[in-house]
Length: 449
Image (cartoon, rainbow, N blue to C red; front, side, top):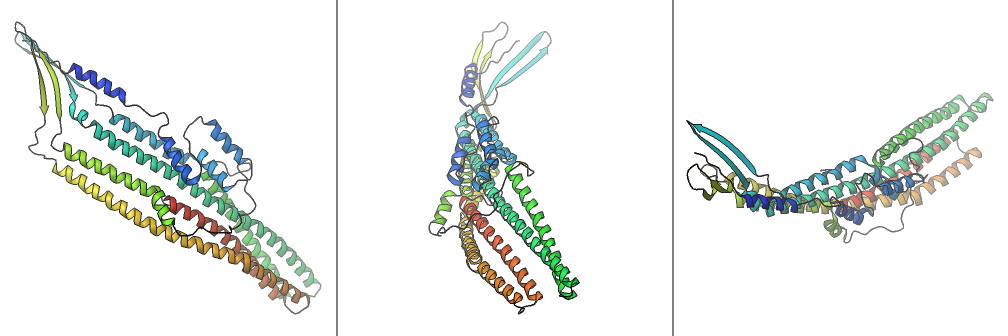
């Protein structure tokens, strides 16, 4: 006897057609990412390896004193960590394309012999359940792909904010180091004068020791400031994706001036709820799990469903035609565990989305309060403390010249003057960092997942 099973030649043709319907997008999903980053940080992103124009523009920015927007532009073009995050888009898109294609048809072959009789079986099977659930799986993968786009945009926005923060810290560290160089030069001259005055017998050994100790402390402060400047520059260079050495990039000499007006709290919370990328990601995750729950409920009783066309021929007998359907019977597994698991995941994502929204509003209010406080402190140092310290120093110097103040009073005033200027630089830096943190709170890119 000779038996041959031929299953579903027409279905195989349909598989080929369906497989050809799902293809990769020309932009790899990056246009949507660029649109999201452009709305939040004013600059697009690109993942093209041969994007010579983008890299050339970033290299041109590096030849000029770097602005904060220029730093962000360079980081988006050169940072390898961001490139790795954007590469996840390709993985998600591959899953989406795969969801639009059926599994390859199965082919089986068997040969048996009983005496002089031989039997050969050939079978070609198609995953029908995969065909039936293909639209649902495509929608799920589409949502996952969209979530990957939001995640990629969030990585780019986070990089922009981290770069801005490192930029302001590097500027403040440089400004502090330059001021300490000026202070050390002044104390060196004072220490030399003290030595000469002591040799001439006009100063006591105590006054000379005080002056020299002050100079040594200033030099120590200079060393610390220089080390801080190097560390801040290296941190910024890592984010920019360029070298921190000579020719890597040029920083301005001073921090930007304080703005005249501040951003009011009104509508900031609403803006954050509409703009925060983590909230959008949480919403997408909830929608995705809801669809996955629907798929699980629809297929919980059907694990395997296969159908095929049968053509059997036996020696000496007429050809037999028909079809065959195989279905796994749900005798031991009714799919209840899978459904319960999917429901639990849906509720989990629902609560996480609500928690994200609640935290977002609180984070924005806290960031705005810090933003206002940093501005008030920076203005106080700029408009009151530093000018008053300068006035006090002038008065002490006049008293010292009139022999109404001692060297000790002069040294104490000099220390306070140095500390006041350093605190003013830090206050100005803290304001710009607080402003960056507020933007990060509005955009929802403050912490890594």
